[in-house]
Length: 473
Image (cartoon, rainbow, N blue to C red; front, side, top):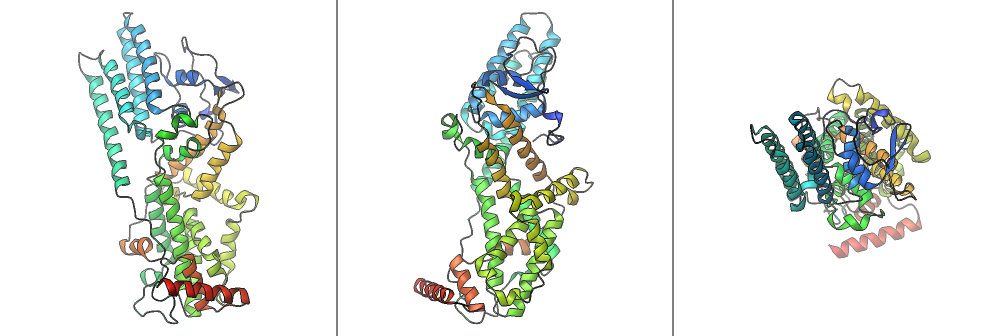
């Protein structure tokens, strides 16, 4: 990703994609409203992507078009079309005698390719895309036989691209093993826990430190999510042109792994609470996680905060009325207020906006942290996709829709680039990532063992679950 901001604001003019002067003979079918590009044919939008001697596309347009183009055309096909336009312009310039203009044009083409390979390296993972890239590079370097400067720049660009692809490939090869819930952990069906059994408080009893370690894990995982991954929400579903790209869509492992982390954290919180036999200790555990969630909120780590709240709202935990009667719930009520789902999570969105504004003016990485609730972020993109068509009735691409989607994705990418200011604690993180978690059935058993069934329905459920788990064991 480019290091400098692309979108200066949610609705700012910096994302207008305005046509620059002296465009030459270019397609004229794109439609603009108030200086903003809102629609156009695929061919015309590709034309706007390719520089000329006197024009270079706005970076917001480059990002948005390259991001959204995969819905309509394979990256290698787009590269081929870009290459054809480049070669045609180069040939026109070569017929003249103005060598400096040819050098200027060449430099702009290299810059476009550089931005493309840095921002969307996975577009070049297949042989077809690499072949097209090498073809364009070969044609461009033909005018650089004297000093080889262009060749050196392209060589470095290619090397950086291969390193980026290699790094991503290595990450996929060491995919984490999804932590499977425990159904018959030794203490579930016992009235007393083993004395050697660890819990989170034995590893970390400071809510702030645990919140910081959760944030470290969040930023580490979110760093492996790329714009192409997020765009699959659009390109891999029911877009009008889905038949063109479905077979070449990158796997969604990164999104699934991050979503799995949220679920594991929720279940870990519930496990830690339900498996405590003594009410006093269980009350302490609940209050501890409330404090951790509050620290996550203060940091700007909304995803961990939501996961913790979700874990405490699971039925096996929520039914522990004797425990909750001893909990000082004022702080928990505040947290639930922030995550109130009414009015499309209005309270959360206000808090998120405040954290985003703080991040923009922050002087330290600590103040720059913004980790949104990931499943809500995904739903927002999907909602934009569903309520707006990819193409307008006249057949043109609805580019206004993709401005909105790319703006949200770019915000996410900006937040994920923040370097974590907290030092890694291997002991705490090892526990968070590997401690056994109970299945839903096991959670209910542990909950019933802690506080017995209160009605006939719960008694029947308890008997059924107990029998089921004993038979499995």
